[in-house]
Amino acid sequence: MDKAALVALISDAQHQHDEAVEGNRIGQYPAGSKAALQAQINLAKSAANESSSTQAQIEKAALDLNAALQKFLSLANQAVEGDYNNDNVTSVGDLAMMVKAYGKTSADPDWNSVKAFDLNKDNIIDIQDLVTLAKLILNW
Image (cartoon, rainbow, N blue to C red; front, side, top):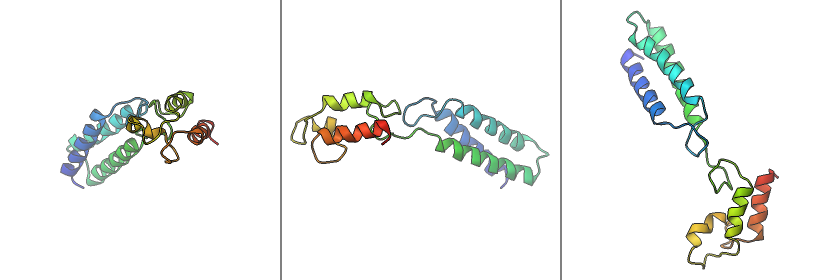
């Protein structure tokens, strides 16, 4: 890898960093994760900007930055099954939302807004769905 390729990698990593948001919502990153990535970006920038950097130092900076970037990207909060209020956990709050939709079927005009609660995909929100969500809450 040459300096130009390292500079391109730095640019990509910086863009990913700058676009990322820390928080507990889906697609957001844990607190402190952006600072860790920025620290590695800064190390890579030092290697790229230093005229006396050896080929080995450039390659190491690129490998380290790429590893840090991949780790960072893997930390993005993913959807949690049964999390309807988007707080990244399955809880009684989600169960309360499901209870409001209890008894709805695919024949109801508002089905599209509640069908996510149909966990067993039988086109009705019933006791089976409540039990399934309760099991998710209790980690059964």
